[in-house]
Image (cartoon, rainbow, N blue to C red; front, side):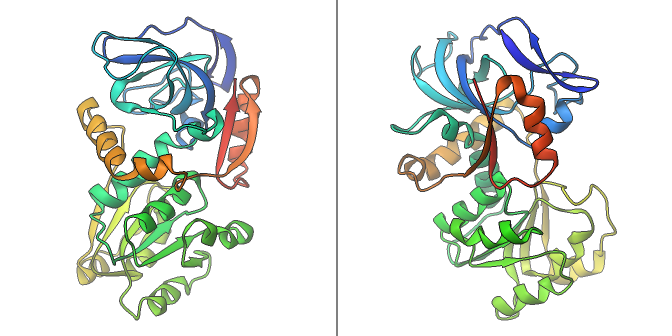
Length: 322
């Protein structure tokens, strides 16, 4: 089968063996796959948790039709239209653990379905499970114009947040955040942005931050967080390391929570997916949770698709079509 695989120089299209499903897995004929930031690293052979490496197919999420199921799999059969997360999605065929497979709603396209699996489980986990979001609280999504960020705005609203703040350093993208649930949009290049958030929250700050920036923005983020607030560290787009104001952290009595899928067990990921499905699937089926597709590329232009992502000019998701 054709697949976009990792090489020392980045992605390359290769003919590789079609995967065979293990007893717990579903084999899918991929119709569309979506890009994620982590793919930029794995395309150079860097591992993503226990997965990846030179010669491995790249891609964390896709949609398509079930071809075959392992002996332990229940609820899916050949021909079912599904959306999946896992590894190896930039390919004509991919396998996923049954706990990371969800049925596609009627009327949803493969392109649209491929954009959803990672953002749904990542942001539901960050907001609801790790972040302990309660109805009536205020939420901030740092880096909100990314695919997962836009989903975070929508999930926060759906789960009862009173005020939702989103950040973006791009003027055009920031202007669109209100389309996806933001009550306030701020530019973190402006040193006064924490004051804007404090003013909007009557001087209290937001109860919960999903931080996909980290880096030097962390001190400002803590300033904008309420007493006894929570910051869930999901991404590090602004930098892996920075000076940390431990006294401000203590004064605000903030819970600073780190999350990643790279060190989670299969059972933990299944439970995350189960919780997401219980809370969100009715809204997904109704079309209330959606992501815009910035651009589509054919599989054989996967390297160009990643180049488009590196330019950081996209709004929403980039999709590969098969």
